[in-house]
Image (cartoon, rainbow, N blue to C red; front, side):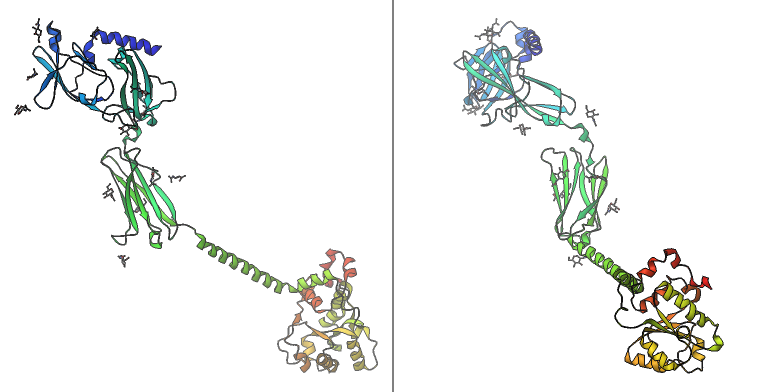
Length: 533
Ligand SMILES: *[C@@H]1O[C@H](CO)[C@@H](O)[C@H](O)[C@H]1NC(C)=O
Ligand SMILES: *[C@@H]1O[C@H](CO)[C@@H](O)[C@H](O)[C@H]1NC(C)=O
Ligand SMILES: *[C@@H]1O[C@H](CO)[C@@H](O)[C@H](O)[C@H]1NC(C)=O
Ligand SMILES: *[C@@H]1O[C@H](CO)[C@@H](O)[C@H](O)[C@H]1NC(C)=O
Ligand SMILES: *[C@@H]1O[C@H](CO)[C@@H](O)[C@H](O)[C@H]1NC(C)=O
Ligand SMILES: *[C@@H]1O[C@H](CO)[C@@H](O)[C@H](O)[C@H]1NC(C)=O
Ligand SMILES: *[C@@H]1O[C@H](CO)[C@@H](O)[C@H](O)[C@H]1NC(C)=O
Ligand SMILES: *[C@@H]1O[C@H](CO)[C@@H](O)[C@H](O)[C@H]1NC(C)=O
Ligand SMILES: *[C@@H]1O[C@H](CO)[C@@H](O)[C@H](O)[C@H]1NC(C)=O
Ligand SMILES: *[C@@H]1O[C@H](CO)[C@@H](O)[C@H](O)[C@H]1NC(C)=O
Ligand SMILES: *[C@@H]1O[C@H](CO)[C@@H](O)[C@H](O)[C@H]1NC(C)=O
Ligand SMILES: *[C@@H]1O[C@H](CO)[C@@H](O)[C@H](O)[C@H]1NC(C)=O
């Protein structure tokens, strides 16, 4: 409704000032099959009452023909109408009034076969993004006739309520060719008159030349693959140029291609691509800088090519994992070696193994030490008769045979010793300087020898005081020298959980000592035996 009011006002305005309709352009393209008209506006018309207009058409160079109305040309004073214009209406037309005249060159063309307009028959409208865009299907001349209007965009109907005009804020997607079609029907027939606007929308943001993307980029590239770096800028017709900068070993690096390309949608966008055909080690860890140079601005975007962690690097991870795990295994083995005694004791306790049940022996160990009268109250004496039995018998549940303690004096000592050693599972010898210097004949020697040679008994050596050389030992004991000798370290060895007792237990036969332990509160284990002295 609003539009119709506007149109009416417009018509009144047109009626009042007919000069609006005058066709001033000299070269006119007309579409074949459409109604066409020329209106001649000469000053003579206003100054003289003589309203007689003569219309002529020139053929070739010289011959001119006076025109008069026929079946498709209507001459009405200053107006000549074609219903419709045809291909053979091409030519130069003149209107003469008095001594004035006006000429037009009319060229008639066909419409695109598939289109609804002709590319040479366009009215260009330019709009800025965000600014108003107005398309109005108004025709000064045919509007007056009996008509109907339709508006098309790129020859397709426009979705939405756009019957004959568009008024909106321009967007980039509004670009296109808009065709108004006036449908006319009169005594000459039914005709379409088209009027096409080519709408160009300009993005005002893109006026300033600008590079796209971050200033510095760290880009991953895979060895042996192609890598393309894309540098895109908006130039917007300015005198800008894009170029690449990078360290070149050779001036002509055939492995690197530079490709210019421009976006067909928006000519203002220009891309320059740097293409590395096959990425090599020497292409990596380098800067590739794209610079936009224009009169108003110089900008650079830098790309740093870094190696992409490919599948080849997995083997390195595997190597590291293997290294770490083998280190862990070695560590474990070392720990096992160091703590093998503890582990074995634990294992024994866990299995409750008992080697002592069926071998028919009476004692777990025979204890031999220096029985020198002079050192009756010496340290070894205390160790062999008190500390050792206290620990092994009372705490760990072994049964010892200590000659001095267990054998009634008198009788054949050597025979006794023989039979006692035979009844024992281990022979514990407490070594000390005194033992060494003693001139006493070792009552053990022969039995010892036998035991060693016949391998009937295992020997445990305890070094009670530090011994510098072992030459004093009887020949048979020297054989054992390479074996482990338990060192007694006074106070350090006293607690039951010390290394000394663990090692001793380890060398002693496995025996189910559960009862002994369970009757012993945990705290007691740490109590030094010596406190009882
Ligand atoms: C047209 O006129 C020119 C001189 O203006 C003349 O030389 C030429 O012969 C004429 N051509 C014809 C076809 O009459
Ligand atoms: C000639 O034009 C006038 C107005 O410009 C109109 O009133 C008249 O009817 C026209 N005559 C013909 C024969 O079309
Ligand atoms: C009008 O013009 C025609 C030709 O241009 C002429 O023959 C006629 O005499 C003129 N009439 C008047 C009144 O000037
Ligand atoms: C048209 O007018 C021009 C001057 O404006 C004149 O030279 C020419 O001869 C005229 N043509 C005719 C056919 O009257
Ligand atoms: C572009 O147009 C919008 C809408 O009119 C306006 O707000 C903006 O300031 C313009 N930008 C430039 C750079 O001119
Ligand atoms: C409008 O038509 C012209 C001429 O055919 C063409 O060059 C242009 O691409 C068209 N515009 C659109 C947006 O289709
Ligand atoms: C006028 O246009 C309509 C729709 O575009 C079409 O169907 C019709 O054939 C056209 N008529 C003429 C005479 O060109
Ligand atoms: C730009 O950098 C940011 C953060 O550094 C990143 O998230 C974004 O993807 C980068 N843009 C491009 C186009 O690389
Ligand atoms: C380069 O980047 C621009 C903007 O991101 C994009 O429009 C263009 O298509 C890209 N060109 C290629 C060849 O990938
Ligand atoms: C790319 O464009 C630059 C200027 O912008 C020009 O110097 C160069 O020759 C062009 N390269 C190609 C392959 O077209
Ligand atoms: C490229 O840019 C980086 C970072 O801005 C810079 O360190 C480097 O020197 C530049 N390289 C070249 C060849 O311009
Ligand atoms: C240039 O390239 C050739 C062939 O790839 C190579 O033999 C030569 O050493 C290169 N020159 C320099 C300066 O790196």
